[in-house]
Image (cartoon, rainbow, N blue to C red; front, top):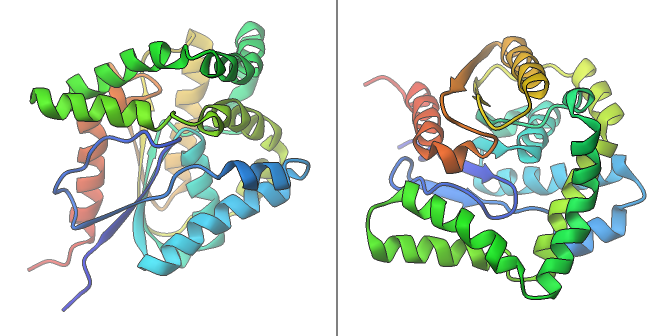
Length: 265
């Protein structure tokens, strides 16, 4: 009897749509710990390798899996796939970060991004962060279910994922790490041979400045085209947080790949 297909989920922080019964087993790997990023902060190459090796270790434990990654997580799982192709059965990239997209980010947004981490950390220290996070958690809950009790539980879980200061600090540190590792990722992509597995790139269609949206869409089309079995899906009415705006799109993409991998009767 074949082992069940597994799905490893790597989304920023602890944010993810609930996959329900889409697959038999879901393993969630959250962002790197505060201790890890403090230990390796001066060396981006070492930092990216440690994060990737953490994910690869999870995959070694559970066996080859379909892996889903959002934003910076979407770039990380590509790095893992290039270095550990035998661990990957399929990829779902949810509006992933691309190393060359930053050139299209307006200067004021780049400055805002750099100040985001310290600002959110200060809000958390002052006890104000829940006011910022609760509307996003409530929106996610409303999109996920009509059951009032489940909505309350999802909103509470969302807030819980930012309960500690280090969890909030990860937001700004993640942005700096993604921005600072561009050259490293460019070299890795140029040398990479994408594994011959199903790959779906879910791409946002709203919520970004026009130049950034156009550049991102083009780059993610190239990511899909470079994969032997890749395809890009433009998610209507989906912003960068597609798993919030259109959670069913993520579930459908995962289910599509799982169905492709299941042996014919």
